[in-house]
Amino acid sequence: MKSEFTNNDRQPVVAESDHSSALFQPLNLRGLTLPNRIVVSPMCQYSASDGCATDWHLLHFGSMMTSGAGLFIIEATAVDPRGRITPECLGLWNDDNEEALRNVLSRVRKYSQVPVGIQLSHAGRKAASHRPFVGKGPLKSDQGAWPVIGPSAIPFADGWQMPHAMSRADMDEVVNVFAQAAKRADRLGVDLIELHAAHGYLLSAFLSPLANQRSDEYGGSLEYRMRFPLEVFSAVRAVWPEHKPLGVRANGTDWHPQGLQTEDAVIFATELRKLGCDFVDMSTGGNAYTKVPIGPGYQVPFAEAVRQGSGLTTVAVGLIQSPRQAENIVASGQADLVAVGRALLNNPHWPWQAAEELGCSVEVPWQYFRAATKAGVPPPYVR
Ligand SMILES: Cc1cc2nc3c(=O)[nH]c(=O)nc-3n(C[C@H](O)[C@H](O)[C@H](O)COP(=O)(O)O)c2cc1C
Image 1: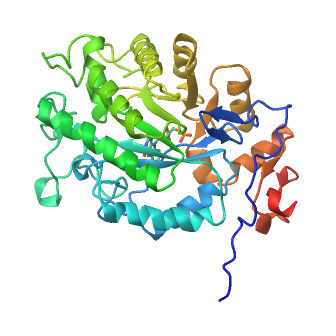
Image 2 (image 1 turned 45 degrees about the vertical axis):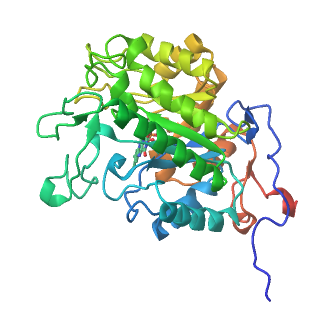
């Protein structure tokens, strides 16, 4: 039988570290070594079928996992069908979903050994929405909407569904589906989990006074509002292998005077750290329609505040588009890692460009080596 060609003839090692750049320093998170500080930010592809990854995922994962970034985080992946943002969102709630993701990952893994994370998510009261570019806002019932859940019976905005205020039994169920999805991720050989507790989705909604007006021990003061997200974190940590990192994407602000504030984010991160959290990925917004002062690196101050206040390893994200900007964020200690989203969609070899600009080296697949920048080094098995 003809043996199959792959890029894994030898186990790749971390590319030589280059001390001239902070961005290209490796980072250890528990048993995982990231070869550099560039993270592919989780980005929904709205291309799944009943939660199952499709051929689009093969293309997208292939592109991002050979980009030169030190960590690829798979898009928001629903732990329950009701937790999908849109009907086309990726999921990991059943065997079919697991098998579809296994198929994609194992095929890309033949050519890339970059660490892979997955963002586990429940969209809460913002579930059952249109995918962008096709529609806007919530689905109507004749468009396939399903009932949504949240901490309180408060819709996200006018025209959005009234969520069912979760009972303790509903909360137990959500804790359980997060833990089950984490077990599936482990079986898939995923290296890292990021829990989605930002952007107004279920865990973020519990944290935000705008969405959470419960009068039981899960609402009211921050201590109570944090309780359910921390329960989910602990349940996932309990089933996720000890050597694998677990982190959280959280909001640094709701951009609203009555919403979650940066001091709250620091306290949440501090509590997460006590429970064994390995990193926080600091984003903002999504619990209400508000005015956001968008500009280059506009969320970096939240990463910096949370890093200083909690001591946790921190990811900065949001309009980080130039290599020099990314380098400065890490070198100045504002964050330990930078997540890059749209700049990587625009230029899937952004990390090669960054390495060249910063005078560093980055691993590139040998097939592309003749085209690679001066910064490219072939993977170790062809050196
Ligand atoms: C197409 C697209 C899909 C996204 N999907 C997710 C997602 O699944 N989970 C998430 O936390 N953020 C998601 N985001 C937000 C990005 O992860 C990132 O935080 C945001 O785009 C800001 O970073 P950037 O300016 O580098 O793109 C998405 C953004 C884009 C552009």
